[in-house]
Length: 595
Image 1 (tube, rainbow, N blue to C red):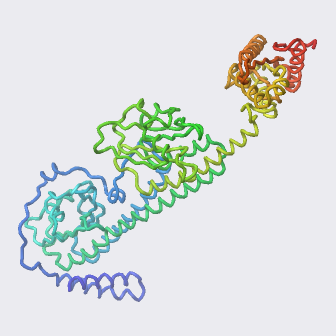
Image 2: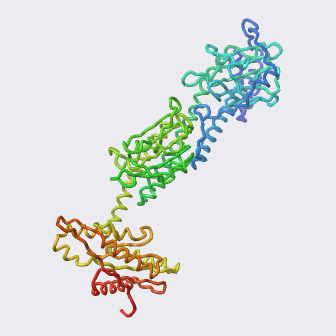
Image 3: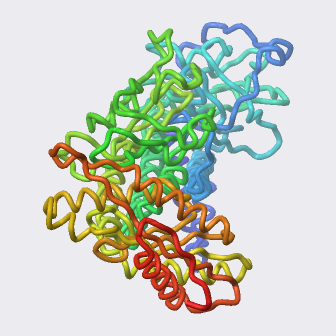
């Protein structure tokens, strides 16, 4: 009856606060509140069994400061890895907002309860901070007493510890002799009554408590405890719904980021940019202690290298080469196009290589996740692989795995597209027989090199060369043999120049041009002679008694910084080649002005 009168009093006051004609309800609210106080029942059966008093000294030595509960610590362990993803700030903002919302909801709930239970001194909601301990999530009182918000309450925490015990569904005390000390107070007021009920999670585990205490004896009864039980049933649901809502929002944002990178992929036509975008996405959105991105150098070859790496001991993997014969688990996932996940926390006393047996053995990395990135989902072998490692066992959630799987599918398609584009571009730029750049690309390359040479003030040597009596080779041995001769000479030329600096092209049928970057007149002639001698040493098997040998004639011209026209330079080298042919072939002639 008392509880009904308190509720009626609260409703009347709420209507009175609207003002106007509703103000006449204030006296009725006062009468209802007075009747409720007068009708408060005492606990049946008198005093309860005495409970040992928890003294201040025991409390001071037995307490350990607690982390204030939040949604993530209640429903999921939060762990920190090596990287700090750029998305972490936005994620933390979402969690902070969710925590603020749930804090306000809990505070409003306690304020409402305080209005319905005027005898209450303090009202608290305890939430889980570990599997066996609770901390103060929210509280409300009149400010005359101080709450210790940094405590941990467990099964051995005196009076409140009873709520941890199986079968205890409420704590109801109405005559605490001398006032029982409660752990959540700093100033230890003289509390006479307390009612508390456990908060159960969705799995019926004890996840916290709802508590009301009072300085008045017998302030609460079984109806109060029953009402608190109904409210407590909704506390965990409210917290979990807020957690799930924040988590779903974060996951939606993560898929938005995935969509953003999908767009970036389709704007990218460079294989190297695809590598970089894969690395950037994973680093910015998925936590790890070590990250490796592996790539096969060529789809038809079994050699690859680590294109990006970051994290613990990552310096040993910079540009590290591997073969598909290596026994590393990351290489195996790439070879078999199979997602792999390993937990090394139990039963692994020996290090499992990630790439090969030469790498540094780090036993602290307990979780490994390898996501292959194939260009076709049904392919037997993948061309790329993303390898994530963490110091924490069971680190990666199903959501993160699905997110990475979706990303890998898009990345594989984009990689195949970029690779085909570069291959098509390469075909347009290169001679199909020798692999050297073609006539058109040569002019573009020499023009670019000339601009750089003018800026830095160095020379470019131009060599024009022609296979001697090549028509006789085709007429005598056939065009297949002629093609083998051309390829052999192209390889010989490439072997005598600086591959990363100089330029070599197939200029016509049996003609080749070499651009020697930053050279001297002596260096130009010396290189031309090396090429001529290297070609002279070639032997071609034509299935006859004598092998085929060929020679080349070479015309040379040195382009100095004051000479501007690269087409004229090629023409001068061609004139010198003509002189070499006229002079008996198999020789090097340098262009001179009198020519």
